[in-house]
Length: 612
Image 1 (cartoon, one colour):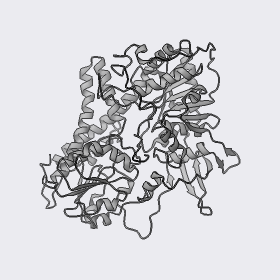
Image 2 (cartoon, helix red, strand yellow):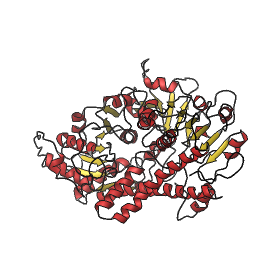
Image 3 (cartoon, helix red, strand yellow):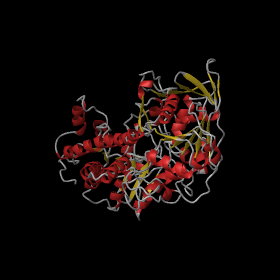
Image 4 (cartoon, rainbow, N blue to C red):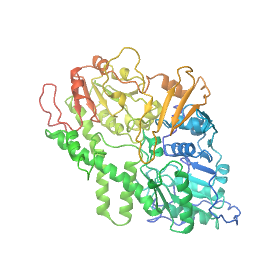
């Protein structure tokens, strides 16, 4: 997200991303972990503080370690709803911290920028009841000071899958967690509460306690499990209106008291019926199982889509019929190119490794197949593209609309598009041109560089330029702006209101209003309170983010498919990898449309039954 010469890899948090590899032979602290001493490098132990915390002091200072996709939004929403609490986001990468302080946060999420501006810069409310809102969200690289003054410390660091050693491809790499815990043990004050926010293996709370005890004997500290359930593209909404908040603790009096303090922080905006206090083991496992269940549904409907493509059934019709069963429901029954991102595959792999560690090979095999099915779906889609040209892409240009792993996010991690491009490049097309409304150019290039080889892949800031003279367009994300929109005179206005559910005491999430009288004044409303956002400093003339965003059309501006169709080369194929385009309208524009989960048809009307 920074200059190409110094890219910041998108992650849950970049804290200690460049530290040495973990010394544990496996990531699970219960199954195969080394002695705790082996996790701890030689370091001088600080003097043990003999004071004992009562656990009753109110939380005044929170430190969130990790300024990535989880830590940044979580800290901002915590600060928004708890104006009396100082929230500090800690990360060792100064470039990432500077981005959070600038006009261009490194994470794109609807409404996130407004939440950050209110909490980071302060704001005046439009009502006399609330008065002026003072800043209470800060960003820093000073780990010693930030941890030392924190009453509560959230761990939101990167926990990728191991790529080496025992458990490679399945176990969790705990490098960043171990590094952060070492700093916590060294600097935390007695009575501090550590909160797991990253996705971690079962038993991590116990692992953290053991490390702290070894590093700093006698330090009273409690460890809670508070897993995130954020869907990228709706993270702020998920945080402001969560389905549930899990708080796992040790089944001791001190543990339950710590859990109660965290519950009180969430109670500032979350109904008490949605705050669930359980034990830490259950909380850690629940996170993995929740994502595994959701991913399983996606792989299941994608398996059915393969059958639909060989028969006369349409997967959307099948999903609708099945989803009306109240025992099943319609959620996550949408066929497509499969799931991507940093969570589902990783969490299924972690669950698989846990089952293997317990000797449950049949259970491991069952969950492993969910990821296998997901990978197969990407290959199936790529083969459908190749089949449209009788197996020969030589001299062809292929346009790709959408690179992020899902809509409304700029996260390029484990995007299904990467595998599709890799398979297409094996057929040596003339060019593959990519456009995505939110992804930064350098992030896309970083993801596709390992698969490009000598192939010609370009990232463009204009969808019409990407599609111009292309023989086929692949729609890889179901972004709203990719839906068909009739041609209009003048510039299309972007929607300014985000409508959210209103139940269980929740208000609508947010509304952005540009005041006509003062174009520079912005007013943002959340939970019934309106804030006049403070003006932001102008970026320097060499700001790479400004250069990138000004070279592309507004992210919310709909694509005019008539314009795309006019500039396409025959046979003018549009392959819908998300099954959301209006087939009849596409065909009316002279485009040939092929959709996941529908039986493919050649331009002459003959059925394509051999596209595998």
